[in-house]
Image 1 (tube, helix red, strand yellow):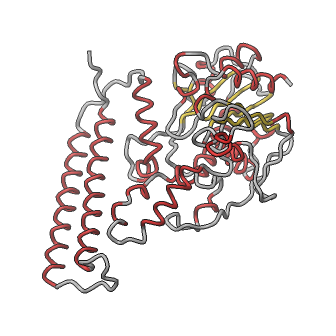
Image 2 (image 1 turned 45 degrees about the vertical axis):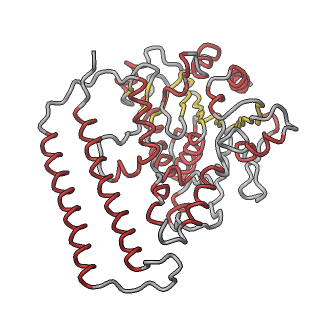
Length: 403
């Protein structure tokens, strides 16, 4: 039996389809303009179009946009009349599909007010949590004073911490250490600094309304999640947030503290092809989300991206973000190499993040993240997502919590 599709999902998908038509129209018009001005690729000096050609082409594209915009408004008005379907429990597949979409274009969804944009929320393994006193008491009837918040990575959700139906590290910490796990879901397409600032606010509310007095707060992030956590600590410190007084430890799993090579390569590829006016309109990769672009160097702050043009190759001008005094930091990296001497591990890392980036190592002393040797661990023969459910990784985290 097919479940009814919520009306807001239909509205969001329909609106995104109209946005796609508008984007394709812009691309075709730009290509048309280039061909009209540069009929031959080797013609270095563009020529002026005929007035008639220019007026006709412009009127055609204006008409297409006008029709598309009109249909968009009619569609929105019509779909708004649909009865709201009862909000049933989301399936894992639905959540993952929405998380992937938000990772790819979540900034666009938020800017256009699309209902498909994910709002930052807390979850248990089974339900959404309202961070009010009553909501937290209902969701955590056996809450302990020791709280652990899990922050997932790009295009993922809270379900990523429990892959293949096996208990995750949160369950291990709850069983072995009496910690209470709370899982975050957020729009990974937004800037990391935007999510970091909001997380700082959400953690303040969570700790203030927790059913019992919070004695310790720990944060565990996978991939981009570790960057969001470090950004939240920066903004929490600047805002004198009280949850930082309870913060005891931060664990980062496969976090690209100094950037991810895949995004760096994609950026350089775009920058090279931008020089060709015939190819430049087709570079849809440039439209990847702000969150993905932040992974180029591991941006944590607004200043890291606000004054730079992401479509032009540039330098790593990030502002150094120090660790929080009195907080223990633990970094775990993975590598596909069989051992420390395997060249594949040094070149490929965990296939998404290089080992030096995941361990915080950097040639620039200001960007290098200094950790005690026992606070950093590298697991060989493992990929980026294996960090989420590997028993050895779970045991290492439990051991660190036990110290």
